Image (cartoon, rainbow over all chains, first blue to last red; front, top):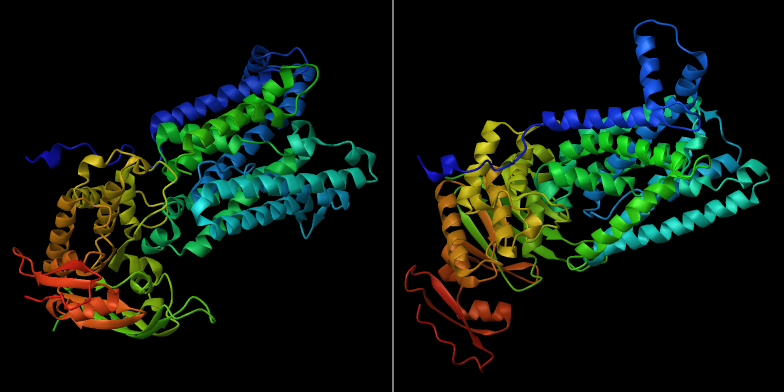
Length: 351
Length: 272
């Protein structure tokens, strides 16, 4: 028997979904959902929600007011938070892989602000319905986000030497440009409701309506499925275009496909609730720390934990200054901005 | 007669219509079990030859054939099962572990989401052992030294199981012992029937590792043939613009090239 036979396995994790992590992700999502449903402006607590669920499950009569608050007010919000978090965290993982930059995130690279500008533009033009069956606001947000990432990627390619920082700088500048456009559009709008809404810049789950959920759910499911299907390709692209090419991937089309999917995820999330920053930065880093960099695990687990994270962040936003509500983006920025700075300092010698 | 694996026929290449020619009429062929060394001064077009061979860039004129078919006619995956590349450097920003990177060499053999099976793991482990990086499997690649990372990339290419191996300066960043190991590895691979095309910075290593050398200069092949035929003081000094001394390596008997400095040129001796 040689030493080789007894050597440690060459990879720690095999196969798609390590069961303990799946169990943990499911438990965290459930607890987050229960907490999200269990706290709010009214006095109903988690135990009331559990009681309601138990009564409904065993066929006993339920209190109509309790049911209405939980199902009509809180549930859409929790579902939306889960979907938005999953979308942002998964697209963060994609941007980090494609830009080969651990600092990337839909907000940092300017995609969120681009999407918000797209959404606000559609609203100010009065195009809030559907054209050819497509809801215009999310579609316009998607287009705005895609335009932003294509510009940023172009700049990153042009300056390979300072790629990591160049990407971030380009994203920051694009973001402030998009924010200026949003401010201009909102201020110039004759509609007093639009004029008063700065929620686009900081995110607000108060905008969520049950009618908007099917579109959001469908687009997020589509985007996540597409990104997951491409996650092995994403591994290869993360090693560089030439390496990916040598390993059997045509890098140009694969990158464009992934940029479209990630912009779709970010676009529909932003169209639903505005800009929620740093979720796509924090969550993939945490998942990567535990489960490694392989995108075949990183993408699905980032989506799951991203959903739970945003549900909890929304809960904090609702209760911390109750009865007033904080914008959700303020909560995520309070967690995410220091984390970003820490990453930046830690990586500066290599950047 | 051994099969031609890679054939360049009057290949010209430039990056754009108004750009200078990077390659200006290069013809080459490499056969099974042959180690071809590409040498030449900086910007001679050596890396471009490798990029044309993988199809990463397309010839502006002329044809490149892989296993008898023009490169462009191969699907990417089919080509990647036959041709493996060790690039000079790989951008690493994410903390992949060395074992994961080597396992990615199996990518052309997987489809869809394709999780690797036992055979892939075994091939990757064997490749790591062969490149001397088995013990680094659990280390993040961005924490490895330059030389260790080179050998991890070499292991990834070996794991690919290709019949044509393209190496871009395989010995750079390596210490003496590992340079020697790479030369031995190239010899062994050629003996197993793998065709190896390698760009070498160090002419003595090139001579030790290669059956034939092609010296590129200004986008053309200045000389091609056995190491003894190509590495003459006249040819080398004309291409590199510096005086050299060529003698025989005391152990391998292959040409050994020593820089003799910019003396008046008459001091150049040849004892080969």
